[in-house]
Image (cartoon, rainbow, N blue to C red; front, side):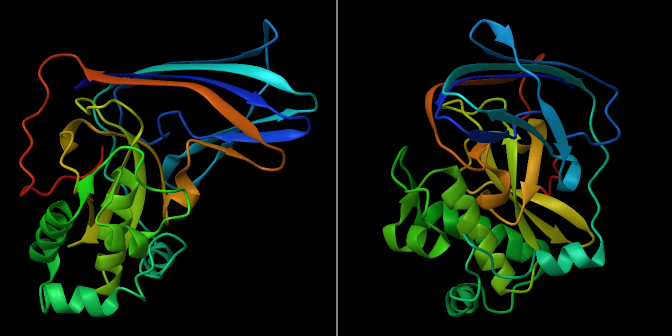
Amino acid sequence: MERNVAATLVFKTAANTKVAMAIAVANNPGYDAVTENLSITAGGGELPVAEFSDHHGGRFHYLEFAEPSEVTVDYRATVMGFAEPDTSSPMELIRYVRPSRYAESDRLLPTSYAEFGALQGAELLHAVRDWVHAELRYVSGSSRGTDGAVETLLHRKGVCRDFAHLAIALLRSKDVPARLAAVYAPGLSPMDFHAVAEAYVDGAWRIIDPTGLAPRESMLRITAGRDSSDTAFLSTVGGSLSLKTLKVSASVNGELPVENHRELVSLR
């Protein structure tokens, strides 16, 4: 499969602002070929950028601005083939079964056991996906950056990260390691960066996308972590910025895969 992705960001920074971006395709082994280009400019000149490695092949690009700046970021990549399935150490599996900032599994434990009883494995995975899909409405702009799984359940609506956080919390409540993955998602409408859940079932990480907005087979990992606090596409480490423009595209060369949400799919 050939996947083509791109992202354009324009933002204004205050003085003494440090910026971290997670927009590049994860550096995972197994692809037949990856070609990419990252251009970051301000005031008509190219800016130096540092690249830092994160969990699961994720890459963060880091910049510092001493003076207020208007910055344009343009990223493009073509990925041929599929990555090898991701693996995890015992410590990572422990990390991803614990409650976290946006996936408060300890608070949702009674809900999870009431709704899913003794379900396990793939049966539990499908049940959680279907329940979140049925209980929430996808409403653009309906959630705040501080909302976690509990707030999402109370409001019964959200965007992709909210759907993923609720699924993650419910699975962790049943002692299933689960994490959030930021992805490029060909076929997504409206097009944007996308967030899905991954759960460790029967020795493999499987994608859950309760929104059902894009086929999972063609999704492409950017990064992954405990929740969206680990995977934000743009964040400041001191200082502040305002985002003026965000454009994302993701496509495959040929027909999109046909989505069957009952299939077990790994992010590759």
